[in-house]
Length: 418
Image 1 (tube, rainbow, N blue to C red):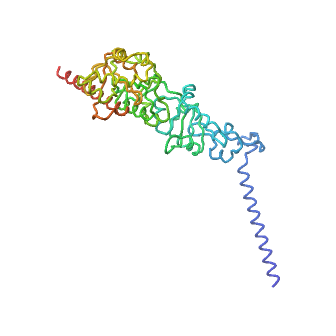
Image 2 (image 1 turned 90 degrees about the vertical axis):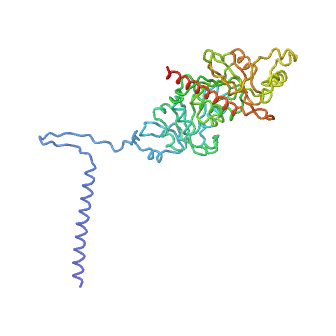
Image 3 (image 1 turned 90 degrees about the horizontal axis):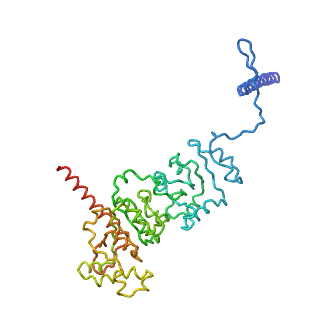
């Protein structure tokens, strides 16, 4: 019994040696395939020497390495500027903000303050649609902060060259966002120059000889709505005189819904320079915010209405203290009042919209008088003082558009007859 067992163990041992030998040979062949040849022997007998690559040379991450691999190897304690990520399909690089990175908070402090904004010449745009509209109009980006890479990939690649791309946590964007639902991307842009902007072709095609002048508008929501109405009506330009809220205030941008990049906007205009921004022979009309007092004048009871209405803006003017009642009446510009739905677009027109608190300024009435303009009255029910500034502006601008469209249709009809 012992002899057969001993023979079985011998045969099993020889079999294991054969398997181990085959496995060893297989491993040797695999290693040989991985090696680079040291010498190459050609059929002619010529031997070509090849240098062996040093195994001790450290590998360097090439430009084609995957961004995922880099993130895994990226040390957390390394400075963000020393660990740029590679964006393979566009050749762009972005940094990842680590805890303690102050770049976002530093720029937010600048763009959210009007003095800093005007001094640095930078503005803040938030949201993918608004940023896309700005890039399409030719606005120059300086930096983008985003929480997800795909938000940046949606933007035109040619617009992102030489732009700082910084990935931050969504919580950081949420802390600085003015939106109820932040969209995960914020852009810092150079303050747009209306002369250098490229506005949509459809907007240029429907532009009318109609200019809007905002006077003492200080409510961001009202100004944003007015800019949106000006773009919708086809105004050729919007002028903001000194004393108005900044058009690039975040709240104005939010209410404007992209109107900033559809109509030229000129900020901080002095009244002395307003005529230089208007086409030749422009007549300036003032939106009358005196409610039923203007209706009294249209009923030939001018005396009471003139004094009651005009004192609304005189009480904010320094000259009131130096003038008696009779001198004030003689000194005030004399402007006729007409209903807003009567023709006032026979020549290029500019409409002045005043703020709800201070109304229109004395300078606006003087400019209207010098150009042959009038007060435009929107009749209201007795007892209602005046309309909201944004509502009044929308009514007047679209009424001007209606009148100009009728003139174009009449002109086309006359040409067809001839």
